[in-house]
Image (tube, rainbow over all chains, first blue to last red; front, side, top):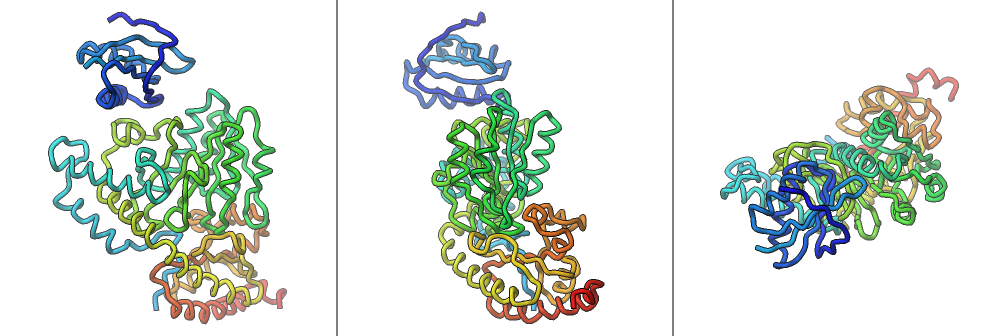
Length: 84
Length: 386
């Protein structure tokens, strides 16, 4: 899957898991999405490089929308819209 | 008679705590990550314990990370927070009266390129908030101060220092190992960002401890490899010990004021009586000190000799920090409050608890002056002194 770079996305909720390793990015994603309403946007902050592949793939597999990523100084911001 | 007066070393397990732990040694042995009932029951027990520990310090359960010891919590906090914030600066501050789990972690960071300020203390071992303020640089990212010294009992002005740290956007960690469960600790009132605590300091088991990490504070894990504790502390949880810590926290919360009254009465009696023995001096602050803590230096004799002779009489006490005691070197804490090296050798610390009573105190007050006299008779300094 090709990465989409975005900026100024307004998220409804943020999960900061910077410094947490695999598989915390997927567990946190799953945990947060379950708590959210359809249409809401989740922002995940992580410095784990594996998330670049895993989060878009997770979105494809679960039918949620991968909006894109924004690169900060020392971590990534991933944006996911809950569809399911 | 046996008198255990070393409650900063460790406390006996409360019987109700042991009872709460037992099922998790036996039938409820599941791994909390397992998805079947044995696992979910262990997971639920950990979460109940987390809520109880959080309640003891007025925190949210999600801010509690279980660890295995106070020393681990301190290492985790100092290294984890300093490294997480190093992009913003590499200057940290600790006091000179910290436990070695802070001091040595700071030395490790120093070797890794951080700059560390070791804050001085006054004659009571108190850190001056103005010194903290004037030592802050643009590079300062973390301050760690003990809530109370287990060696001299002094309670530090944590609230004032935390406010200064907050003003400058500096993370603030307090080592609460000697205070949590023994005196009221409210993380919101104190304004700390992180706080270490250990169960065996409040009648819980050894092997269970915790670090409070305020929401939003980033920390680098000390142990990688699993998703336990939100990925912040990997390793299969010590479920019985964590359950025990939760139960001990509940009891500490409900029993605290009664416990404080009990030990304070014993402590005050001992301080008043032992200060009447010639050339015995109190260490630490006379009022702002742990309610169960009486610490002294005894001139012309050596702490280890006092400990041995007290132990022969069934009285168990301490002399400085455990590692200083083992290494037979002067306590850095006593030296930092200006105690002369020779006098610092005569350190003796009595710390009281639930099971101590007036009869035991009577016995101590009867035996201690005799032991001091006997040791002084043997001391090479005695002629000069008399």
